[in-house]
Each structure stands twice: as structure tokens, then as C-alpha cells.
Image (tube, rainbow, N blue to C red; front, side, top):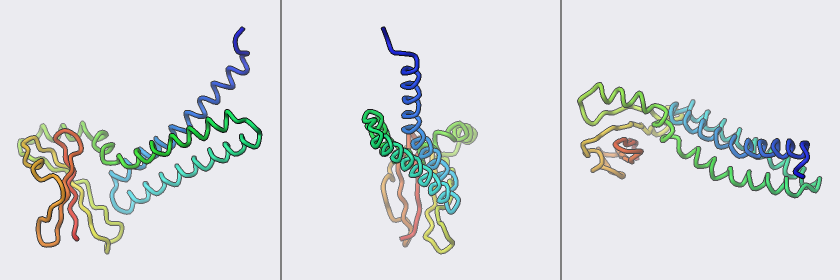
Length: 183
């Protein structure tokens, strides 16, 4: 006999809402992380902070709807909402943490174009300085493309000059992120 049309439309609407509750924080986290990586310093901090506030707002709204569903004794809806919110937490944290990878992925065509234009290796792209204030310790971020293996030999943290330290990590393929800072 099947499901009545009204019940089917309601379940489709509920599925869409649950999908939105799960995906919205993840998308905001990825966007906030990418903007934080593009605009290092005060503006990047602001973007990251606003993204975290928006995510927390969505989670609070979702939890309020979950509590309301519990008071209305709609156990299935409450359980579904709770599971979706719980699933979005680690995904959102991963989205915020993947800021440099998203930055690289979005700008990849530009970097490939610039790499093809030069014969010098390694190719360096200055990403910026993460200091919030002028008195903060500066962390300078540089993306490096090196297909010769020269940068790969320096992976990890090492002291370069006096108090200057450099941390080099592989992002993807021949792309490396180098962070220079004073200790």
C-alpha cells in the first residue's frame, strides 16, 4: 500500500534538515579555515573566530531543536538530530584543521602556472605572517614547490640561525609548507 504522500514529504523534509544540520558546520569550518589560511594575522584570526561562532550557533540551535523534540516525545527525531550533530563535530574540527590543504587546493592552478613559468627550483610562494599584533612573535609561512628533493631532506623542525627556527612539512606531492619563527 505504501506510505501516504504527506508522510513521505515530511520524511524528505526531515532528511534535508538533518543533512543541512550536518553539512552546514562542516562547510563553514572549511570556509573559515581556508580564509584563515589566506589572510594570516588579524583578519585571518577574525575569519576563524567568526567561523567557530557560526558553527557553535548552529550546534546550539540543533541541540535546542533536539531538546524540543524530546519534550514532544518525538524520540526518533531527537535521536536522529543528536547523531547528526555528534557526527558533524569531528568533521567540523577536521575542516578547521585542513586550512592549509584547502588553501593549496583552491590556488593550485595558479601555483602550477607560476611553476611552469620559471626554471628555478625550489619555487617559493610567500603566504604571509601570522602575528596578531606588532608585538607578537611572527610566524612566516612559505609554500615551497620542490621536485628536486632538496626541501624533502629538511623535513621537520630545525634551528637555522641563532634563535630562528624553521618547521617544514609536506602538504601534498612536491608541495611543502615552511614556517619560520623565533624561539
